[in-house]
Every structure is written in C-alpha cells, then in structure tokens.
Image: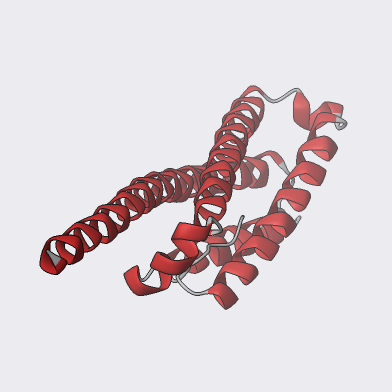
Amino acid sequence: MQWLISLGLLTAVLGWLLTVLHRLEHLHGELSQSWSDWVRRTRRRNAALRNFVQALRQALPEGVPAGRELEQLADASDRRLEGSGDDAQGLELRQSERQLEQTLNDTINAFRNNPQLSARDELVEHCAELCLAMSGQARCTRSYNACAAAYNDALTTPSARLAAPLLGYRAVQLI
C-alpha cells in the first residue's frame, strides 16, 4: 500500500515538473524566436543606415564629412549582435541601441529640415527605407520585451521558482 502512495506522489511531482517545464520551454521558444527576429531587423536597419549614409555622402559637397558617427554606431551594433549572450554585453547592447536610435532620430530630423537635402529623390528614398527599417526594428523590440516580460513573469510563479533553477532557466533582460 505504501508503494502505491509513493508511486502516486512521484507521478504527481513528475507531472507538475513536466507542466512547468512545458510552459517554460514554450515561453523560452517564443523568446528565442523573438530575439532572432530582433537581430534580423536590427541588421536590416544597419544596412539601410549604411545605404542612407552612402547616399548622404554623394549628396554633400566633396570633403564634407558625413555619417561617420552613424557608420561607427552601426558597426558597433553589428559587433555587439555577434556576442550578445551575457548580461554585461546585453546592457552594453541596450545602451548602444538607445544611443544609435537617438542619433538616427536627430539625423533624420536634420535631413527633413534641410530643403536642399530633402529635395534629392535618392536620398529621400534611402531615408524612407531607413525609417521603415527603424519602425520594424522598434516593433520587434516591443515584441521581444513582451516575450521577455511574460517569460520572466512565468519564472516568478511559485512552482517555477522551485523548478527553474533545476531546469537551468533564468530571467532575461529587456532591450
């Protein structure tokens, strides 16, 4: 009789553990997919940025430095995407993305307020492409942050607090 009670308890504990594992695995899969989408969109934005800078250089008179800071920020963003696994690099990635976003917004506003530059069709096309890429990347950032928040919330439930360390799950940071 005791072995039957022990078997029932063991089955209940394993069932509970499998339920927690399934939920965390599902949320972790969504988080990984969302991260992949964000990386792809960020690379697309960086490519659009380089195209915009190249068009800007062609539109400006010879010898005027243009877009050097933007190119450097895009290159740094690409490098950080390659090694964005640990929390220290994640924090650095978030800070660099905010700096790049602010610089891009300032540059686009300056471009829109300059009638000589905004009259050039090719430059306007590249600016529109860049704005579209920025919009897509911002959408992916919101999606990733929502997935990360749901995943982190799932880790705070009482059952997950007990099982997550055993299963190797840990909280992630938002972008």
